[in-house]
Length: 170
Image (cartoon, rainbow, N blue to C red; front, top):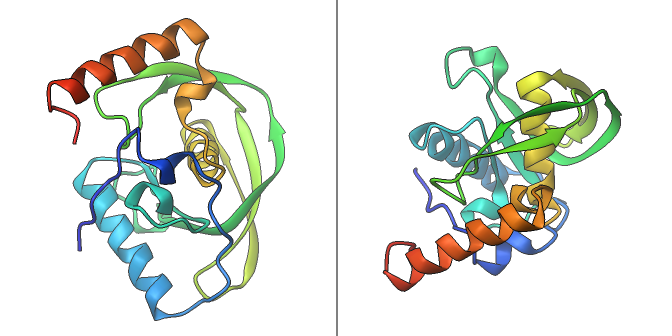
């Protein structure tokens, strides 16, 4: 089922998500719905707060659905290691229509749980590393706007306020 994506301005997006403590069919269904929602909106990652659920769950697929093995579910993730730097364009399904260059680590190692509660570690480079960092930021209540200069951030916020006023930001 395709879920509603919450947009900038919704409090759930700027609140630290709660740890997942129950690993059950409900969590599995939420992850499936999040993948479906992410693919329908042409994203590479989606965090539970973006669909209004304040839980530490994120789904990622840097292959855009082309490679089943690229699907990644992170429950209660934490970044263990960050290496190098990269600057690249980022957008966000919760801030549609806006893209800016963001500085991130080039490579990350993350520890998380799977949908059964088993712990695992994985790492990513380039786009996958960027997506992992972006989604974990969501779980911490941080939007990519907070990585921008004050000037760029204010410009985007001003544009969003105009869209809200015009009824074009639902």
